[in-house]
Length: 377
Image (tube, rainbow, N blue to C red):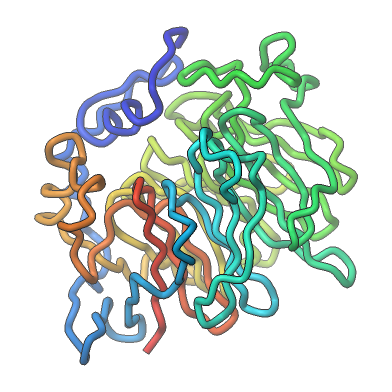
């Protein structure tokens, strides 16, 4: 696709009509989205004091939409992703507004939700993915940005930049100069826009070019480009917006699992890039995390899915087809009206991760920002 499109319009069209992505046309009607409710229900909620309980059976969580406390001089600006370190501190990256150049793009909270500090002002306007990874005796942040710098970067937990990587020109997928040019072209496949990262045991990593070439790039532990997985399309092994990814360690051999968002599915690959399996029935899956035998999958259409050790869905938190119709109506206007948001209901979960106690932190793609804590009960 050669025309330039606005990112918000792209996602809105993916939620309600049909969209042409690359060479593939995908029908994403709202009615079909709302009909995909085949998994175990875990969709009810109940009041418990002043808290809302989501889920059923072994997977019940008390939800707190106001767990993180921002100081008055700061504001959420389209929250995107979250990560947790070994001390259970929470790191939130939001898109940020480019004109607010002194505002931090990354904000850090302790395990009680108290704001500690912020940094990453240079990423304002383009913040996207964030992960914490230990190397030796130290933990580091790895972030991705999709506007402006368009980089994958390694930082200390205090925000000091160690290195950054731009478009891997060795892949021969990007326009000349794309590794130095800062201009973002939405809907253009040869314009690098990395969304998330997954780590190998040897220190190497995979980076999803989710908004760019619709591929996954592999790097070695020194950050050198190794290879590329996939291409744009709807077949097994192809992607329409590979937005999130994780190294799934639940089987005998590690597997790469990818949230193939606009195709509404997860795909598993061997570490060397061979397609292994595809699992559908998701609603714009955005990313993946793991704790023990559980995979955690936030979906942009108002629910969180938990996948068990046999890759079967064991719970879908917040799943409500009638509410989803309301959410998607009027070009998703509800996401811009915080006064209408309901306790215990998600809007657009863009990322989620487990904390060190098995609770879940959820960041939602809404302009006013929303980061919730789901405490397991």
